[in-house]
Image (tube, rainbow, N blue to C red; front, side):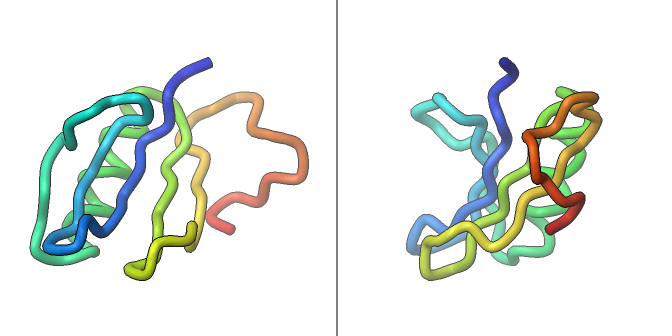
Length: 77
């Protein structure tokens, strides 16, 4: 299974991180910038993009080219 790409707030900035990595891919001042890069990385990897809210919980998930998304998964939901 391919590792998902996460967009999360690290307390100072928005970070793009690949699941299982200890380091973030890149950090941004705005969520919009981080989501744009995260979406691009997820599309190239053909995996899921997980976007967290600033307070921590998952806000949304997007399948970016996964031909078999999890059962019950709603695109952009």
